[in-house]
Length: 79
Image 1 (cartoon, rainbow, N blue to C red):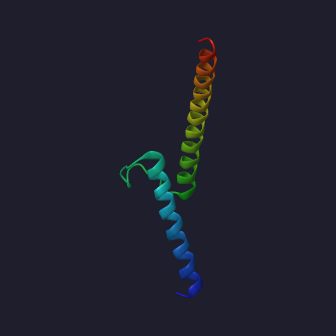
Image 2: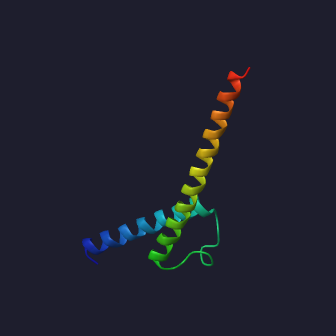
Image 3: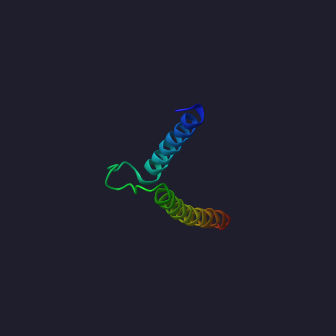
């Protein structure tokens, strides 16, 4: 195996580790053989879906927080 092949394999191993970490952060601990799709594009697609769901929840929470702030600002003027 030459240096190029070693570098490619090392890079793939790093990317796989990063995918594992993202899946853990977004989905929590789970059985590695049961829940994880085997193909890299499938794993990336699942991570993208999780991020979209998280973004939707975050936007909703931001809106609720803004409404709460507006409510408390308005009610403090009513004394």
